[in-house]
Amino acid sequence: MSTKVAVVTGANKGIGFAIVRGLCKRFNGTVYLTSRDEERGKIAVETLKNEGLNPSYHQLDITNKKSVESFRDYIKTKYEGIDILINNAAIAFKQNATEPVAVQAEQTLYVNFFSLTSTCEILFPIVKNGGRVINVSSSAGHLSRIPSENLRNKLKDPKLTLPELTALMQKYVDDAKQGIQAEEWGNSSYAVSKVGVTALTKVQQRMLSDRDIKVNAVHPGYVDTDMTSHKGVLTIDEGASAPLFLALDAPDSVRGQYVWNDCKIVSWDE
Ligand code: NDP
Image 1: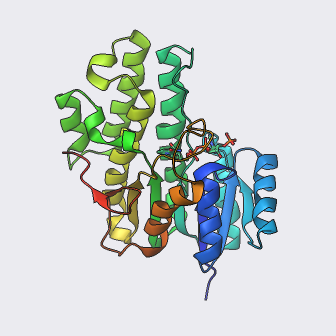
Image 2 (image 1 turned 90 degrees about the vertical axis):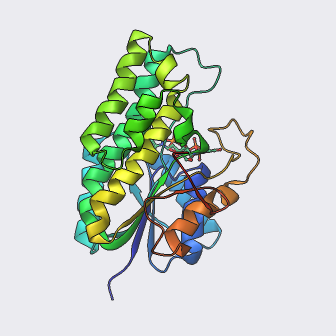
Image 3 (image 1 turned 45 degrees about the vertical axis):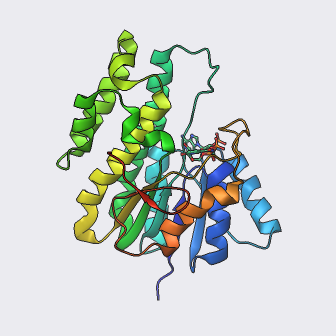
């Protein structure tokens, strides 16, 4: 039988690192810890090896098309494809960040939405039929975070296409550059990026249903990581538990859903 493969982006620390740890313990296959920085990634692999686990490593910067393509080509030569893809990598500006909103909007959407989307476009052809994709969203990725009813209606439209969603996310960046984003989009670039990730999950599920691929979004909880300046109340392993549930335990009927850290499905658009 061919080797099964699981891949986690942004896995050198935080929740992604704990997802790799959990997969190494429970997944019957090869687990790729990937990171944009090779040195940080290799240190993370060593840490897990010291725990008796055996992750594999590959460099993967989701903002760099060449990096994603070279990872895809590497996987293609070694395996039949990817069984589980966990899109975990993301950034967040701190609340007291001094960068103007236009800069925060552009950079946050660039990594959290546009790069996640392009990474999927490159890797989806090698995700195996019947595979699972987990997009790490957030409680901030709930549709209610968008003040404009008009925008909410567009984002939850069951016929929304990827080009339409991409155009909406670009509109946010453009609005932020003009300083007119707050009324319709709210005050958080991070929230907009994660609403985009949740909406994307539903679009992707529709695109991949004929290949029996399950795509779900997850809020991992408020977790003690660098991103939260260690104010989160959950450990990284607790934060990894809902992503691991979706990767390994959720019934196949769970598709295109928004799942909370207690592993329960949450209504996204009410
Ligand atoms: P961390 O900041 O601790 O870790 C983020 C990871 O993403 C790091 O490994 C970072 O790498 C990596 N990363 C950033 N940019 C890129 C890139 N271009 N390519 C590849 N990797 C990249 O965050 P958390 O562990 O807290 O967050 C993990 C996920 O969970 C994120 O999607 C986040 O939005 C989400 N989340 C977190 C919550 C929390 O309470 N912590 C709550 C809700 C959602 P590097 O070390 O090189 O910077």
